Length: 522
Image 1 (spheres, rainbow, N blue to C red):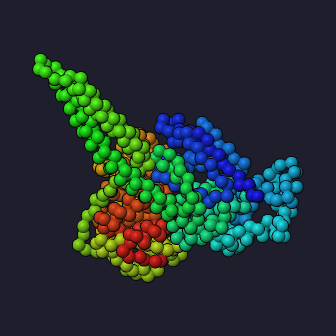
Image 2: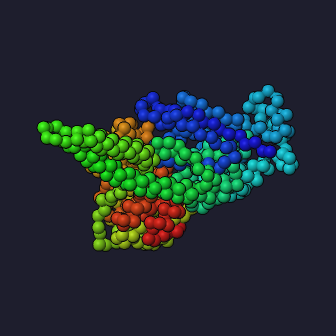
Image 3: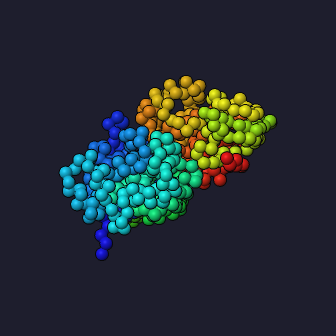
């Protein structure tokens, strides 16, 4: 009989000292260490915080117990100026609990400088050396073994991500905490990594890419408004169950509201009738005062009974809709244009004497939404930088509107108070804050320094800013990095409803295929 280790979270409570609201309060659940678990929830709900709590980086109340150790992704690389092989070997060396043969070497006093020698001697049960094991794993994730000879710093962000995932899964007897691995991966890279992860087990992964999650996970851990739930299945299964539960609760809520109103009116009526009937006992005329009193008391008893049913309905109603995320409709400040918003002919872009792009021609008409698609490094960002006015060497013809709203990939420049940001960007404060509310923000968030916001919340600020700007063309460069699923759906619905003119780069295929009217593949 195989015994599966479990991670036990019992009465976990946590809040940051800098702001008083609870991130988690008395939550308890179990996780099996062979699960492939997707961690989902709106931005700011505490997904990364939960992973950090498992890693022991914050103090908390309650208990977290586990028979396995945790490892976190992304891994921090101390020295990037060495070969990729050295980076991978160093990242797995301190965690080389490799089967019986390796355990014998580990009995040597644990000094980091001895691990290189230990690894060199190691041969697994199939006769592979450590270098051969690494090469096999590198090929599984879609890279050529030659990449291990290259300097790690010269690799693309996507290549670095894949190599660090490899080194993570080469650490034995660890439960892996993988935080947003897709943000530096193009569409093809996401498919390759999804296939790689689907062959593994024993991890929690945070991602907002619905297709990516569906191809990997077998359980969902959802951080909701009022609780934390675990369900078996992938993201689509969870979404279907969530939609059904929300619909049931909305219908039940409406039914109970009607019942409460009807019962309240009936109770008042019975009580009024009882009082009126009781009043007929007084006076000098002949009447059966005992009968009248008995009937009035009976009517009052019925009124009290109806009131009790009303209170029970109110109590039942209070249990509903606590996890319903109401996604209010967003709005755009678009400007209309009769002419083509953008026209490009025979565009050629050079970078460091290297031709990045050659002979590209396309145009964007009013109402078109153009998806600029291709592998990382094919020139997508160069086109966007050129269009927003950065100094890029090029030849060719470009005609564009001067009313452009831009969302960058980068958020690291965001800091300071929100009110100061609003003044600097000359935005309408009420419009911006209203948009942020619709994207899931609470008022308390506006009081914090923007640099303390989560990456998803910073990205939402850039999206809200763009929605508040009057523009003829919206240029969005990977706008959905770190953005939660509910907000993605809101943005999709807004774009399909308002039909703004757009040029966008996005590696979330579900989003791109849903909103694009035209695709340019580089």
